[in-house]
Length: 252
Image (tube, rainbow, N blue to C red; front, side, top):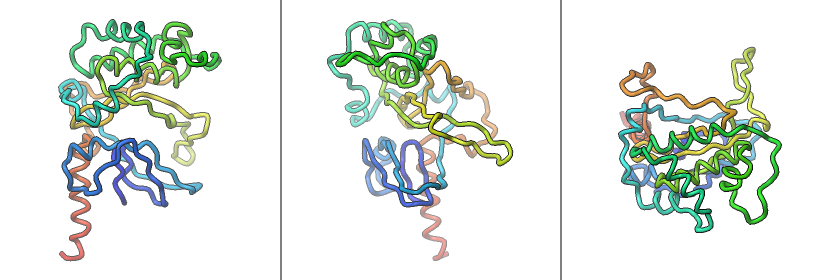
């Protein structure tokens, strides 16, 4: 298996092409923070079916609330910047939502909660040509679907000094009990927002009102399955050890 960081796709059993927003260093034993900054936005394959393994960090509220705000330069440059055309009332709204919050996680959660109060609606008109999507959603439409929610959260988060990115993919789909699998179809396409936390990585937030809110273990609560309780930095260390053991096993 080949490590594709950020996401986190560990391996796939078919040939794939990886597309990067921020390409990682080639060496798995490079400086760790540089590898955690890597940002994979697509893994494309012509295969009709495939199996993939993904590591999903399970972090507690305590870990997120105590995370540093010393963001790497590459993260600050790419994921906090906003175009100068963002209307002032959008920036002002971001300040109002996060006014009483000092921690990065609390700011992101406040933005998520605010957006979840907007009604979900698929039957909405497109934004006017040349208009700002977040402004249109927040002040004119005041309702919409996942693309609007995710866009607004990314803009409001960046306006609050949080590194954020827009993510498109799929919701969990429908469960096929007979075959014990989830079936994901085109109708399950979904968009959400993710915020970067140093030494943890990208953490997803769900601002769309029609989707269930993401639940995290509260501070101090023990996670039963310790195998899944791994931040991005610990996963990277684990992968390095597994790779090293794999190559050394014939020698042993």
